[in-house]
Length: 254
Image (cartoon, rainbow, N blue to C red; front, side, top):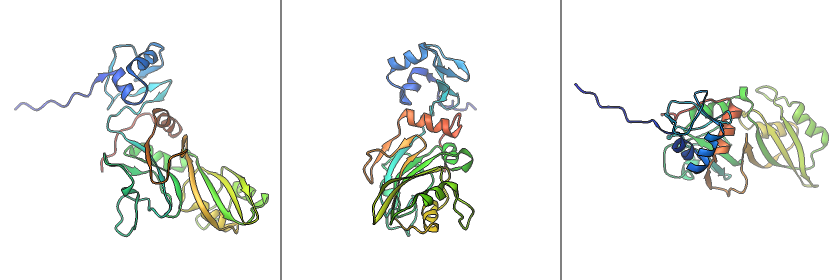
């Protein structure tokens, strides 16, 4: 019995890099000529071919997300939307905001009343590392609280606040704007426990009026409007690979 041949996945390196967002075919050729591209640790040459599903391809030492099935998306989650794709009890979920295409999954969570940057991908290895405290990927928040926050309380955020599930500490914290009725804070965290920022501020006596996540690692919310999505750039994906210490990934099948 003759078995059917597996589909051919080897392709020209220029095509692989161009599809991954590293510029036009001509621009990619310049990267290869400059010796900046490697396949499996070997410096690539013009005319080389690679299997994007198996070969480790790097540019300037940074892994390239070359697998054609990988997808990466940024979403500005509005308040009142639940970070889930399937929940019959949720009035609104991120599922209604994600465009049609290969199924992706949220990287971590934002509680229902929080807003801002949420990443979605089918890259399970990357999602796991971005959420794991071991890799310390930073998350930055703009938080509005009631009242005046003194410098002593800001220092407490970085020195550590006792919570019921253990002490929590911000990497950095600063006052962005202050008035008699409200204070805006910038808070950077390196772990993502449930409602952690809200609980830290509440433990210090401050009620959160609004919380917006503005950055995850190298990816910033920028001018993305609430409820809208955009594809991550090749540079953003490469930087996520770098901060997560990831060498190669493939889509997660669920």
